[in-house]
Image (cartoon, rainbow, N blue to C red; front, side):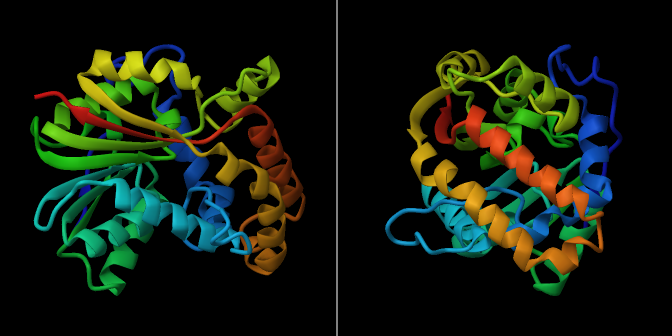
Length: 285
């Protein structure tokens, strides 16, 4: 029950020279390491949330908690249409479809993720509620004002914030709520990390302070910026190390053993240079 849309060049999709290149993002997630990355997060492609209620939670359990927090922040209602812009293998999309009894379209630029998401939806008997699209989230194959709500769940940094917000505003209905889980830069971010992020993980991160202006420019009213760095960043690396050890056998089916050390180092660098925030905005009428 999926659609396939062609990818266009970077000029056509409106990205600037500083934005990640869509084809590079696709290659990263279609590569063996990208395919196996979901293992440590129990099927999800985002970080976790820990507080006094779940300080002992595994990485996967904390990722589930963060998904629930995002669902709780959404204002989507039964029977409405929701878009997951960068849906991974579809686990959060299916979660919100079930919790809110809404219809969800999830888009991913990764062919592997698209195929796996469709498979999981079929196995869960949710193909009538959740549809997956293989394509570029900057070029959603839909009419203007199609969706009643949507989110970028740790994905907007792969797209370019200005371009992604502009497309989100196009496809959302007036008054619709947009949620964004993002990793803002810390004041002490290094130039070395910026280069690494752009060249190796095809991401461009921005400071929290840029959000109000970008949202306003795109046509959104900012409702809240919830800085949850303290609940995400400090526990992350220790939990990642435990997860890698737990799933080592499965991970080594995708990559060589040296890759695990490189992944841990990447998470360490990200935690030193980035925070975590949840943004809620509403499209202006």
